[in-house]
Structures are given as C-alpha cells and as structure tokens.
Length: 228
Image 1 (cartoon, rainbow, N blue to C red):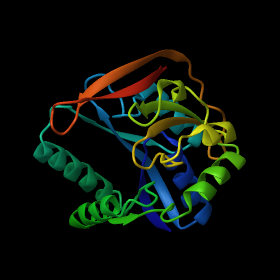
Image 2 (cartoon, rainbow, N blue to C red):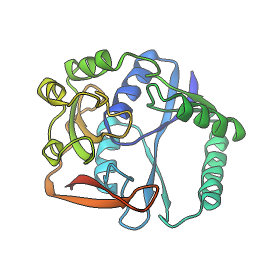
Image 3 (cartoon, rainbow, N blue to C red):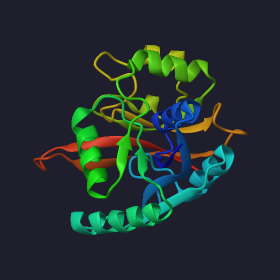
C-alpha cells in the first residue's frame, strides 16, 4: 500500500475522496493534513476551526496534522512552510498526496507540479467522476454535510446552513456547479460511512464578508455560517 497524507478541507469533496481512497485499499493514509489561518485558526473559506477539525479526525480515526500560516504570509513564506512540512512527511516514508479535486485541470496540473518538486506523487480519487452521480452517491451513502459558505454573486444567503440533500440539489440555480467546484459553496461534513460517530456541532451565527474584485472597484459578498 502507498503511504499517503490526505489534504483535508472538512467538506464534502474531501470526505467523499477519503471514502473512495479508503475503499480502494491502495493507500495507507497516515494523516489528514489541513492548512489553517493563524489569526483565528480557521480553514480559509470553509471557516471551520480547530476544535471541529479535531472532532472530525477523531470520528474518522485518522490523525490530524495542521499547518498554521499567517494570512499576511508572502507566497515565498507559504512555499517554504509547505516544503518543511513535506520534508517531515517524507521522513515518515509518506510519498503520496491525496486531493479531492474533481475536474479543474489547471488546479490538478499545479498540484502535480508542486508535489513533484517535493518528491511526492499527487493522486485524485474523485477525478473525472460525473458530478451529478458523485453527489447523488454521496447522499445515498448517508453522508451529512451542512453549507458553511456561499458566493453571494451566484447563491443567495438562504443557502447558508442548508443540509446537502436532494432538495438542496433541486434548488441550485442554473449555471451553478452541483458540487460547487468553482467555489460557489463550501461545506462541513459531520456524518457518514467514514465516521464512527456523528460530529457534534452547533450553529453560532450567519455573517458576511466583502472582498474586492480583481479591479478593486467592486465588492464580492460571501455569506458564512459560524459553527462550534
């Protein structure tokens, strides 16, 4: 079996990719790896904090490895921090990095290139699976996931806090990727066949953040759900 680490986002694609990887019996997954923001210790966009990450890892039964990065870190600082972490993995004879990407070729190529530079092999358990079939199988297997972030330019705030089920899929507007692969929405998985027990959480609040677009002339609004 290939010794691997799994790039864990806390959301549905990660959970389903992990499920597929474990079912394949190809990989010996040594840890879930997550990068979090040092100011507030949350995963970017998903806005999931350390305590919930720990609960997920405990319920899954795979150790959690976290790399904390300052949000103001330069690309070079990020690169150096990642290189140091990869060296730690290699000392544990880990040679494979697993990702939950589905079809974004440019992102896949970038991950493969970055891993190759570090002497790692990048692999993608969900690659090119039909997204409609993927999410319907995800739901039918008993995975439970709550939406924690939506891009307000494509989905309104009412989608935040919804459970990803058949009703959710039916309500997605035309043009929105069913899996949110283009960043339309993000989620937190709290139950399913990879968990020995449901992950307990409570909803704290719904809030929004505005981000400048590439021209700094318009504000893009994102809606979030704070969990704890």
